[in-house]
Length: 339
Image (cartoon, rainbow, N blue to C red; front, side, top):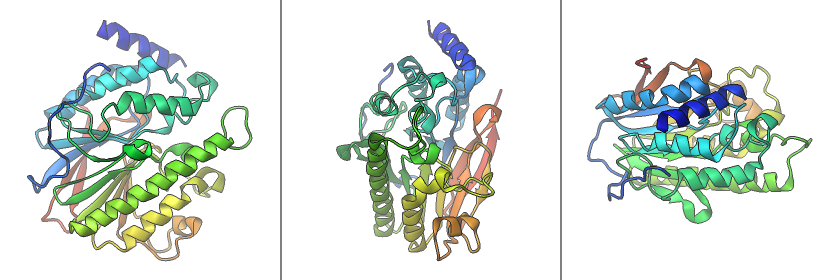
């Protein structure tokens, strides 16, 4: 039945809750291991072949004994396949097979862009509710076999927004999506609807609070670094002449990241997916075109951004290690898929 279900959903993707988390009491806010590694993936699985192969990717990450946590940066499907409950349940069952705690932040492909006819002409806000219902059944806990507690904004209606400390590093998974942070007009409209704007404004305010709270925690705990995990590429290197219609929705978030990073004593890392091609840069360094685009007048040299490989061409996952002997705190490597 499992193989049949996967094959059927894979064919649908090409043409266009099962296991609960652990009820243990462990917490991600832990420093029992000063040095540890975590895996980062995003924009996967895309299409029939990746849907079929995704369990083997999970197996490979599970087999790496260094890895203690996993982060998925959203987009659990491609942008031209249907946003069905059955598909969400399938990916949730895959997520449940991660041996380590899994932190997932949603992408635009699983809700924001579901208004598209080839996605099923859904109401994106209804799909967002479905994503939360499916992937965050126990707010304040991660997914994965060895679920751990995290600090969540569930009480404010954002169970996907979480933060935690691990090995002297403050982490936050922040729900920021492509399609101009969900301000791109839905099918049949030339501008965002009132309901669409209200969702974006409320979620962005929650994101800003989460980022501020994460840095406040980092200061209070004397964290060595801050790591922000999100789906949207707010600094897409392929955008030679950025259009405000594609990026203006990110401005309040970029502003608070710049403000907080500038006041932090250590490195700040932003991991994102969305643009699909591995990239490492300092998006708000001196003379950066993104600084002028977003109106960031003072450089932020300690902000480093890493985009993970994704989409149909992805053939690796990112292994990141917290190394307290390294002044940059993090080091990472792209690990080829075993198959």
